[in-house]
Amino acid sequence: MPFILPDLRPASAELFVLAMACLILFVDLFVKDTRRTAVFALTQLTLVGAAVVTWAGTSGEVVYTFSNMYVHDFLADMLKQLLYLTDIIVLFYARAYVVDRPLLGRGEFYTLTLFATLGMMVMISANHFITIFLGVELLSLSLYAMVALNRDSATAAEAAMKYLVLGALASGLMLYGMSMIYGAVGSLEIGEVAERLQAGVANHSILVLGLVFLVAGLAFKLGVVPFHMWIPDVYHGAPTAVGLFIGTAPKLAAFAIVLRILANGLLTLSYDWQMMLLIMAVLSIVLGNVAAIAQHNFKRMLAYSAIAHMGFMLLGLAVGVVGGDARFTLNAYSSALFYVVIYVLSSAGAFGMILLMARAGFEAEDLDDYKGLNRRNPWFAAMLMMLMLSMAGIPFFVGFFAKFAVLQAVVASGQIWLAVVAVVFSLIGAFYYLRVVKLMYFDAPADPTPIQAPLEVKALISANGLAVALLGLFPDTLMWFCLLAIRLSLSVFA
Image (tube, rainbow, N blue to C red):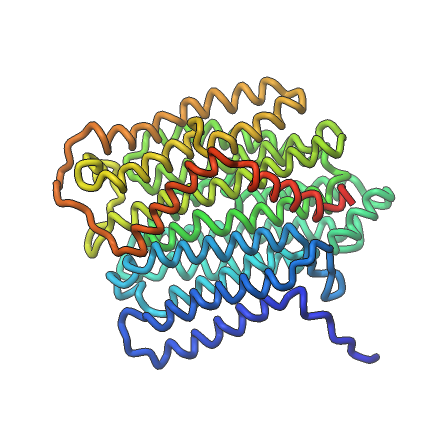
């Protein structure tokens, strides 16, 4: 049988990142500089190069390769570009932090970041359950190692162990669900699964059982209730630079696989998975916002905040199949995409402030560390205030429009009670964001020393904070890109 070489162009960015990650791993062996300046620069150049390669291959058309296991479309291009930008921001924020901590300042942090990025790129473009699983495992194994990088920290080791055990359990659930779907349908290709489900050739009972396990595994990757138990411990125990990475970029990849599996592959079973998503969304919004109030550690507060935000994002995905109207579905899915993008932007800035405040021997994790920040540096206090107000959904920051877009889709679906619950607990959740603002502006600082930061970090945190304000004034362009990505990439709109 002749071997046919697959078309490698749709995966050219992934091949580039893989080659550069291996090269950087090799170069790091010969670098004597403890600051790893060359490794840092090569990692950033790799991300910029991947962005250029991805942009050069953007056509707006849907292209399949590797026997339809991999897809190149506008949604993948958009999410990958956002992924590169997020990684670049994360590495700039983390630069000073990892330099001050020798166990983190080695090249492993940068190479693991690239391998995790490669896993997320595979997840974003996967069109086959096996490809999705490979991407998820590459990302997960990289994150387990990153959480445990600080070997002298018992908290980090405990967090890594919990993450590993629970992550392995979630992967097993996901793999078992995939095997059940394969047994019922006879295929693992997402498009072919959708066709066979529409033809009605599958055993519905086995499908639903497999769907339950699959959704459970996906819910773990998103960190929503009741599969949220790893989020607070990992956010708290991991080095802050690693927590920043975990709390941002993987959300984009997790959104992509949930959308591709449920909206593209298992849309026929929407009646079965919609209720599961709605229950998890409501529980996440309730528990995340209520539990965050009791937190005194900033990272744990952001962890419970992440649970609530992912619940909000699930609302957009869950109600998107209610009306059956293509325009309504497009608006609902695009609102969920818009929400996750805005959350990643805001979360990056919030963790960036923790890294900016930290120094050697001091982590700036406690909320009391932010008392009187306005007296120590008014500009940084203003940036963090805008980020907190955006995450709380206060008009007219972009977080308000993200919540409004999802709530608009919920109301349009006719489920008014669901919108009321989301609004009520969003108001409750605003308390813990406004508490940070109160500490910065109305409490006296324990340490009145002015806060200084490198120019690049000051510029980045300024751009991050101003972005949530400017996007709040002009959200239309980003919303339009989200609409376009969904419309051009999902089979339901073909």
